[in-house]
Length: 351
Image (cartoon, rainbow, N blue to C red; front, side, top):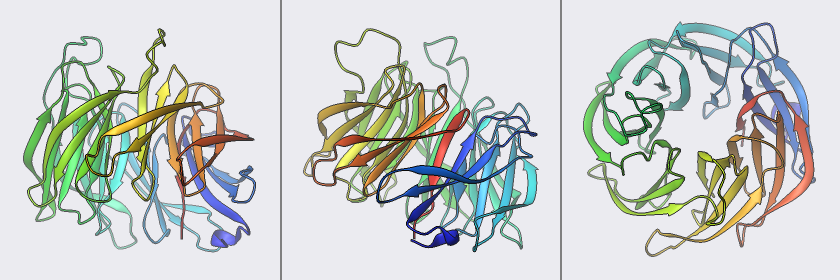
């Protein structure tokens, strides 16, 4: 691994909650022999870059600025050093953007939490996400009155072909499905979850037969069958993300599959754990849960690599690395961590 001149290291960008004058986005290196991490450089000038993504060529980074009048900031990545140069900053046309996704053509989709809007931005000549191409206002409420008083778009995930997008709405208890059509977004369907579930993040299985969504308000993961031709989801089952004997408050956050689709992982804020499930290859159901302490408080976001899992613990301000056994999916603490204040998002840059 020699990306950005980092020998024996995997580059990782980290998004945080920070003031504009403080370091907000960090470039870090993960030693793929030991799991040790270090800060290579950091960048300021943006308020609350709580979610960042890197495009497929690792030439551009996009970051939300999570605030009442949200912004989408585009950066050029120096291919030799990984340093960032701001290209553009535009309003997201929504409040408190909290998630980004990219389409195969490079367009960027922003989920605005507080306004319940999902917006698509087309790229400019320099690869900056600058032109609002589509804006969708989601609508709905749920029984948890202090969290579900209106729609709250929490994430949007697209299929590999960029044909459909799946927007998890915590406030509406729904997955809204959109067709990516003529450069825009057309409502295609929706799936209603149990009242008070609070869908947050979502992932499609690499076999294109199943999908999984983590629900923040009732500590569950929903298992879906997926018809990729019709862009249809059907609920198969729900599983609990925390142990039966846990009596405290906990709110699931992030969800990821291993690259081979054999194991699924979810983060629990409050229980402060990563839960690992084995994926039944025939039914898509989740079995054999195992919990691993994240070594910190409030694991908001994490990344699953072949050999490692990296967890961003927001409240304790540390990123912790775990060795991942590819044969069992089990996690073992490496004893390595990196202090980054209000760490909220980890984005590995892989060859």
